[in-house]
Image (cartoon, rainbow over all chains, first blue to last red; front, side):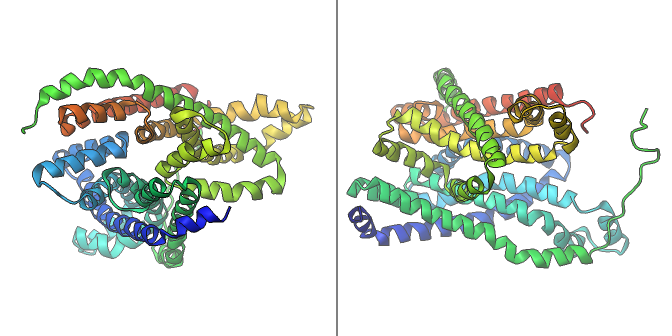
Amino acid sequence: MIEPFVLVLGHLDLLLFGLAVTLAVSFAAILLAIVLGGLLAWARSGPAVTRVPAWAFTELMRAIPFLVVLLLIHFGAQKIVRGTPATLTGCAALAIYASAYFAEVMRAAVASVPKGQWEAAAALGLHPALAFYKVILAQMAVVFVPAGQVVAIMLLKESAVLSIITVPELTHSALRIQAETFQTVPTFVFVTLCYWAAITLLSNAALAFEPRFLSAARNAAPRRRFRRAGPSGAAP
Amino acid sequence: MSFDYDVILTTLPVLVRATGVTIGVSLAAMACGVAGAIALMIAESQGGSVVRRLLRPIQSLVFGTPPLVMIFSAYYLLPRIGLDLGAWGAGIAALATFSSFFLKEALRGALEALPRGLIEAAISLGLRSPTVWLKIKLPLILRSMVPPLINELTLIVKATALLSAITVTDVMRTAQQIYASNYRPLETLLAAAIVYAVINLSISLLGTILEARFRIVGDR
C-alpha cells in the first residue's frame, strides 16, 4: 500500500520541478494576458476599425478549444523561427487565449463605473488616460478582481494542456513518471493535490486585496440612482 | 513550405465527418452532467448538514483539478477500481463530473431565487415533497437555466478536444491524424478551428432562440 507512494516520491524532484514550471508559466501568462486583455478592451471601445476585429477575435477565442489555439500558435511559431521553445509558445498561447476572457471582464468592470465619474474627471480637465488611472482604475478593481480571479484560475487549469506540446510542467512530469514506474494511482493523486493546492491558494489570494478595494469603493463618490419618470410597471 | 488554402478545403469534409463523435460525446456528457447536477442539488438541499459537509471537499477538489488531469485520471484510474469504461466512457465520465458540479452551483442559485410563497402555497395545498420538486421547483428552475446550460455546453464542446489525448477520434484527433500524414499542421488545424467555431457559434445562436422561447412571462 505504501510502497507505490514511496516509488513516486523517489521522483519528487521531477514533480517539484514540474510544479515550479506550471506556476512560473501560469504567472507569466496571467500578467501578459491582463496587458493584452486591456489592449483588447481598449480596442473594443474605439472606432469600428479596431472594434470589429477585437470583437471577432474575442468571439473566436471563446468558441475554439484551447488545444487548437495552442497547436496553431506552436506550429505557426515553428514556421517563422525553427526550434522556438515549446515553453515560450505555450506561455504565449495561454496569454493570447486568456486575453479574450480578461478583455470581457475588463469591459464589464469599466462599465460598472458610473459614466458621471468620467465626465467629472473630464470637467476637472484630466486627460482620459489620467482620468482612467486616477479615477476609474480603483473603482473598476472592485468588479475586476473577483471576476479576473476566475479567469486566472481557468488559465492555471488550462496550463495542463501544455504537456501535449512537451512543456515540462506538472502534468508532463506525471505522464513521464507514470510511464517509468507504472504507478498511476499515486502519481495522479499527488499531481491532483498539487493543482488543488495551487488553485485554492490562488482563489484565496484576492481575499488579501479585498479590504483595500472595498474601502476604495466606499470612499468613491456615492452612486446616484435615477428614478424612472413614471411609476414602474406602467410602461405603455 | 508556403501556406496552402486548398489543404483547408480538402480536410474540412473529413473533419466534418468527425463532428458526429464530438457532438455525440458532448451531448452524452451534458446529459449525464445535468442529471448529476439535479441529483446533487436535491441531495444537498434535502440531505442535511452531513451531505453538505461531505460534498464541500469533493466540490473543491473537482473545481481545483485541470480538466486534462481529470480525464487522464479517469482513463488510468477507473480500470484500477474495476470500472473499465474504455476511452469514451472515461472521457464522458470526467466531463460529466465537471459539469455536474458547475451546473449544481447554477441550479442552486436558481433554486434560491424561487419565490418562497410559491413553495409554501404548494405545501399548503398538501403536495408531497417529490411532487413539489417535480411539478413546481424543477420546471421553473430548468426554464431559468437556459443561459448557464448553453454556456456549459460550449465549454463541454471545447473540453472534448482534450479527449484526443486519450485516443477518442473526435475532430481534434482526426486533425492530428491528418497533419501527421500531410505535414501541414497549420492548414489542418485552421480547418479544425473553423469546425469548432461553427459548432459553438451555432450553440450560442440556439441559446439566444431558446432563451426568448422559454422566458418566464413577467421575468425581466
